[in-house]
Image (cartoon, rainbow, N blue to C red; front, side, top):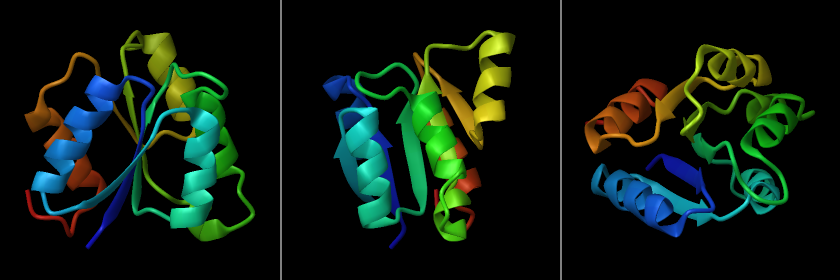
Length: 126
């Protein structure tokens, strides 16, 4: 079963995302800030990271950059789906430059979330 790490400091958003992904049959772990999220990536080696941009201790761009620079090539290739209210073109450019695979803009529909996760994990049924 694919494993998704959700990193978001808003417990309502994190719970909603985790609930919907579990309904897809995915294993889900939730962390509440960038620093613990990055540590969890190393510990859990998830198949996908759903990552908020604006978080305490370490923001999503810093996490994404650190992941892309990881010495372990498998971790460095982990897909990262940014889940953020930052949706202006310069924000998207910064996110992709940091290594984001894709974006879901808050507020979001769970259908869009499922679609983006399915695209990042092609073997996962919708």
